[in-house]
Length: 111
Image (tube, rainbow, N blue to C red):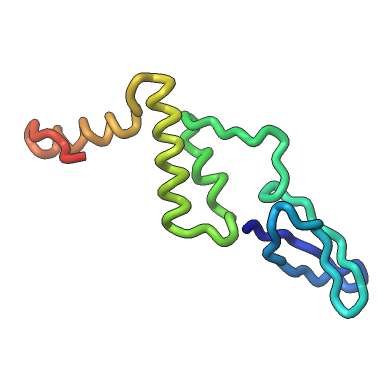
């Protein structure tokens, strides 16, 4: 379930609320309805990331709230699959395999 940010219109206090995507995204506290904050994390104009952009993964995940190592590993695997579909094999993984082999005198990478 995603986190949604809300701001108190009177004092600027912010709060993050865990809500289902199907819920109405409103938050009220002590009878006062707070305004929802729209950030790049909850709203995306295109929804796609360029898997070949070296900084895209870092930029997308740098300030990701609630992300776990498992989430990051899954996202990394999705990017790798996108690159492999487009080029036949993932060039980043291939470069790592080549570097491993070079350092170890031609021994093939175990991954």
